[in-house]
Amino acid sequence: MRALYYCRTAQDVGGDCETLLSDILHAKQSNLAAASACARQQVIQQCINLPDSSDVPQANSYTVCMSSVALMRRCQPALLQGWTPVDVLGDGNCMFRAVSFALYGTEDHHKTLRLHASLEIVDHRYLYDRDVPGCHPVFRQMEIVAPSFMDLLRDVATLGSACCIGALVALSSVVCKPIYSYYPPLQPTFVSPLTQLIVGRGVSESTRQLAVMWTTASSAVYSRL
Image 1 (tube, rainbow, N blue to C red):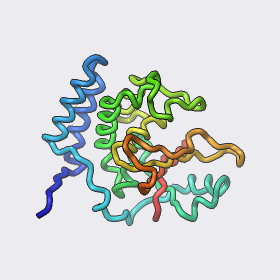
Image 2 (tube, one colour):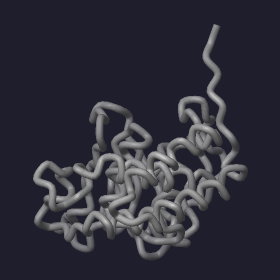
Image 3 (cartoon, rainbow, N blue to C red):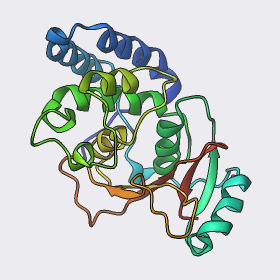
């Protein structure tokens, strides 16, 4: 006998995700916990789950981001031996689209990822608030200008809003995988603080990681293909 795990399609839950994101976005700071609890109840009742990535077949249709390939050939060509930069839609949701593609072979789950990342941030504020001494190390790095807790939540909960590296901490926690954040070096000796392994809450560094690449030309995700 096996347990059944029901997951509605990304198209089916898109509208529900938008509604719940709006509820979180417009909740007063003092009511965030209650808004999150209500949203989580709706997530359970409406089966707004993410698929099990282990059951998802590898993507066999994708568009290689040639501008990213050219950039990597100039700065770090060795990376192209193991990773392929893949185009995703650059509509402000690119970080979530990239993670969705890396995990599921489709960008369609970006709204669900956004919703779960927003709930993660609200429910574990101590990890995402730069003013809390025990926050995640990403928010304490001198080289990174971390947003305030409310600014981070606003960006993550707003569809079409670009997000900072702090959002990757929440995404790593949600998908239970380390995320390698890669920023192409402009000079051979330059290593951006955006280039680092992001390990979210409760995630083991030994778990197979996925990777995303920061680029202004188009958003790309590294996928082992």
